[in-house]
Amino acid sequence: MQIWRDVDDVPADLGRTVVSIGNFDGVHLGHAHVLREARATAQRLGIDTVVAVTFDPHPMAVLRPEHAPPTLTSIETRSRLLAGAGVDALLVVCFDRGVASWTPDQFIDRILVDALHAGAVVVGSNFRFGAKAAGEVATLVEAGAERGFETVGVALDGGPQVWSSTYVRQCLATGDVAGAAEALGRPFTVRGTVVEGDRRGRELGYPTANVPVPPVDAAPADGVYAGWLTRLDTGERLPAAISVGTNPTFDGERDRRVESYVLDRDDLELYGVEVEIAFVDRLRPMVRFEGIDALVETMHDDVRRARELLA
Image 1 (cartoon, one colour):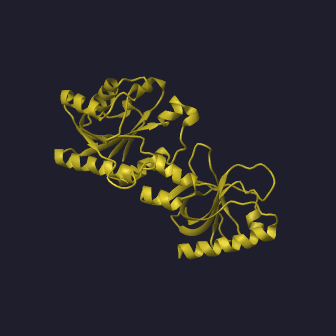
Image 2 (cartoon, rainbow, N blue to C red):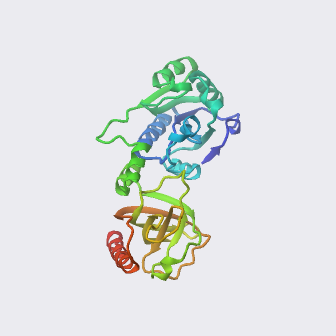
Image 3 (cartoon, helix red, strand yellow):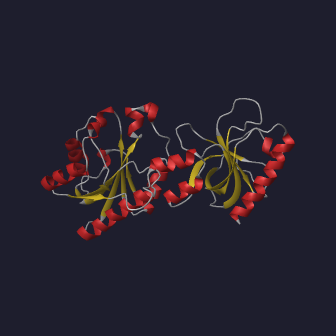
């Protein structure tokens, strides 16, 4: 997949394209539905290239930073998922106050017409764009009639649950990783580099791979989960019991992190290794134990249940 980090990076000789626009955070089933329609539209019109347009950072991080949602996927992960959904190229628009001030017509002319030579634009039926969200699907239809592209608005209410990034975040906030996976069409994952921890897990017989969770990134609610740890250096996929939180049983301030115990393995050397952690189901919420014995007994049970779920 081609990734253009700026409008000026788009090749001047780019041919006609079909364009889909959105944050695409998570690339969930709703996004996949819109992108399938974009690919079908490209085939119908005889156009080879489908381009997704996304924004970095999330517009809310610029317009109302105190309300900015946690990010489900990095641009790198998003590009990989978009490629799997049938997208040929990704244009990442650096969202700032200047871009936020563009009128709908300015956005259409600068992005869709001048840069991407759109033959068609495919968006969700609730799509809004331009300063003060003044543009909508009808705006695209009218502009396309004048500028030579067609517009396809894809209905998002075809089932009992409208898949959205907001819905995925709500699932994660309650620890419902199975619900998030249903909306995403795959398990929710966290990526990061394993860092050295306090080694308490190793002392208790359960050595863990510790991955910090940046405050701007989404993660499941504090608790214990069953899932999979994949080494990104080798591709090896391993069953794991996963703890998310700050480990309240032990005193001291700690950053929130994801700690994965690979079932029945104490021989792994993962410091400095980039891993991906996939969440399958929640085992229990995070609790503070009065003593080590109670903690270890519960960890035994966590591992047993994780093994059963992942078998």
